[in-house]
Image (cartoon, rainbow, N blue to C red; front, side, top):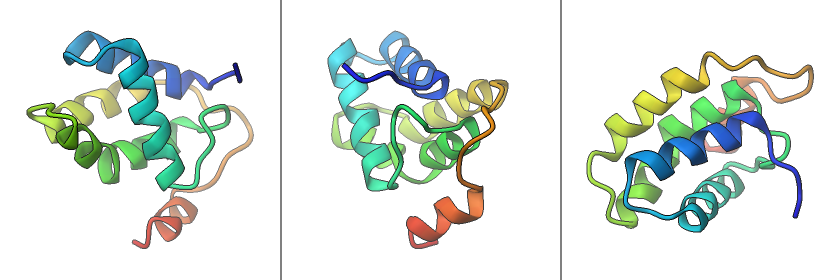
Length: 101
């Protein structure tokens, strides 16, 4: 199995602890959201993950029956913001462009 970034792992762990989704469902949902944003779970940076948490993941969670997905993603984004980014990664502008924003 491919290595994942700290931002990916943090989001998945938070979802697993705060929703009724199991580990596999959390990781799969986050992977699909990242794929929609054109990002790699192994390389996603905290700033990129925050954009995904704001723009993509709430709808994916709502589709899986998670109530309060927007507020939950905002809460998780605050935690992800405390992570230190590695030197590589896209700017938020590049992510928004990929998302059509």
